[in-house]
Amino acid sequence: MTTTLSLCLELGMALLICSSLIEVGLISTTLGWLRSTASAGFHFYDGVSPDSDMYTLAGEPANFLMTQVYVAIADAGGAASLLVGAGGFLAIWARRRHLRLYNRHSYHLRHTSSLKSRTLLYCYYAWIGLQIPLLLFTAATLGYVFNVTAARQGQNIRIEAAMRASGRGGADPYPLDTWTPQSWFPAVLNLDLVESRGDINAAVGIMNGWYWNLCPMLFIQLVVAILAMLELVQWRRARQTRTNHEIKRLSRV
Image 1: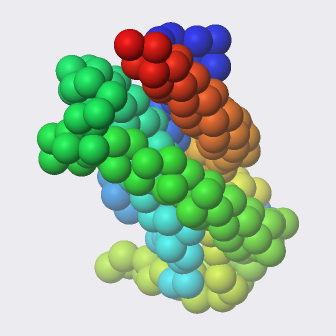
Image 2: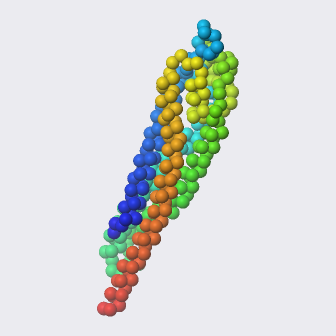
Image 3: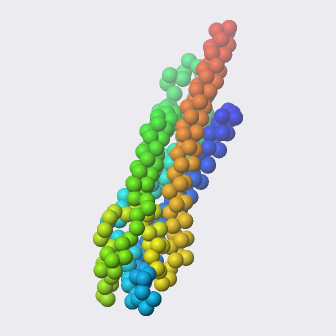
């Protein structure tokens, strides 16, 4: 039986999958850019002397924090998209398949229903049971990513240290402070760059995109969890009502 709650739940899972895939796509784009464009380094002047020599800044600093990026992509691709989203559609299909098998038996024979029927129902209940742990994981991911990133916002690259790290055979990684992608590249933009400013601006926009996309992803997952619980209660009540009607019908025979 398809109800309004069921349709809302399926819509919520579809939106969650879309948001998760956007998250994975943006983070994958960021990682690809780091390994290609950023790895070549950036050229800059000291910003003081008009006839300054050109220096090279390594694309990533020595203390570059990336753990939060991998946690975010694991949460989006694994927890939200696969387990909650795609897993939810499979769980609902399993419940519907269970009902078809369950309804083949008369009321008095249902205690001997097939192992396949019970397994399908247990898969659905397992998905319901995962809602709260997965929601907490996404909330913890958002808190961790925001905390690590916000703690390093507003940092600046010291020109003298960047110039010392530059070498003819290739620049050494910038040695000072710890950085995240969202703090390092805005600081790079504050330098007197020779080129690459447009590429860096575009990359920073993508980084901010997946950073803030964690918020609607958490909200959608919360809505999906609530709808899943409400829809479960509605489905069990409807099934119990049908069972009671069948008991009354059999008692009259």
